[in-house]
Image 1: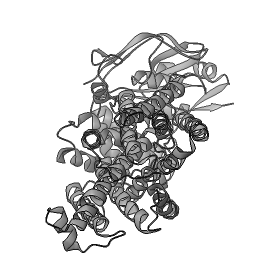
Image 2: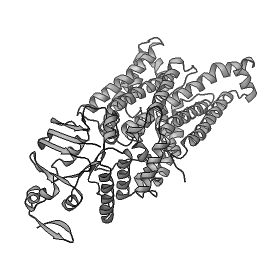
Image 3: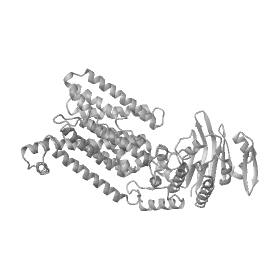
Image 4: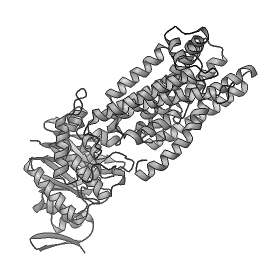
Length: 255
Length: 335
């Protein structure tokens, strides 16, 4: 079981302050969403949490050790990240990308084992991407590509999972089906998931906790029920937003 | 269904055996064909020290050293190309494009003009490649992070800078030296054995890049992605630059700047065996060696008794093959 503790985190991008003295405690089995306007620094925050970018101040500890101090290999055994941008250059097949995702667990001298191949095959079947993995990803559609990348995150098998707009490029039914199936599985496995979400409704629907980046370093975090209010969201998006309850769902609609 | 992971060792054995056979055939052809055609038996006898005097002289003093040099140069350039293409994530990159062989050539030319002893030339070649590489590092890294397009652009500008320096050196050098220099610049293989240090560098680079093959696979997915999978990309990139420049120096000191092998061979092999470096690296080195052996042989035969620079032949073979592969690759979705 993993835990993530963020303390006193300050992140700047150029002259923009993403967060200022941010403290968070992420518990096993929790799903978090980061929401905010364009340019608020959601992706930057995620990259910092992944240990790929140094913060201006503060620390991020995963399973008791600072993510910027542990070796790259150990870090990659603890935290995985799905990037927002698709890599257009790649001539790799889906299968090759999935095998690469086992890298943190593969010994340099022993190489890829039968067991790694089995994990890849299991994930391929669970994610229903058997028909996609033998083709170069360059010829797949954006949505198909996204499903390969989500499977790669599952293959990496870390306690902390960071997803940058995971349902980007996906069809509506995949957005709901893929995301809820994956999140349920990961919750059951006591993993910690943090997603950057563009859609307020998907964010509130799927996450237990919200982190709102309000701009100028101000942030707001807590359980979805208490954070997801008309007032908070209107201030977050700088646009009036109304809340409606229908069919057991809560939806937020911009006026 | 063809499956990269299903039985990699069987596929690997088949491909590599095929390429080794190709190298052996190329060697056999290269030893028997030329201004004097020998039978297979004569060549074999000469190799075992039993042949007649003419055959022995032709095979042992002229053709064998040249063929072995061609093997070393071809495999070195092919590996350097593979490494540069991962580094830049650009299939059109090779030590030529990055200016590494240009820098190497400039220092070799200066050593030749200064009449430096033979033993100094490899040092000059290595130093030139290294200087060019360090310049590239400093210029392309000044913004604090690596960007492939920036690296590529910097490399191209560096290469044209070295080109201008070469023109300058040629125009001020004494007339009797120019022909030799020009030939060398076009890629010219002399009948000298590759030597232990060159073979050693190529073998060491082969071993190291096979150990790092899975890391190279990761780097091919992009810097951020590779880092998120636990790769220390800064170190790996540095190792690639050092390795590629050492390999370039090996090739430049033996044959001058032969540019095309590092570009075409990895490309061709990628289409044949896929992008997995565990297979791509040894295949490219074998194919590069075979291509250069055959090119060297053709260079001796085509315009006999005049001997052409081997770089001209690799370009003649390489350009159409490259264009053809590019055309085919585009329709299969591989760049």
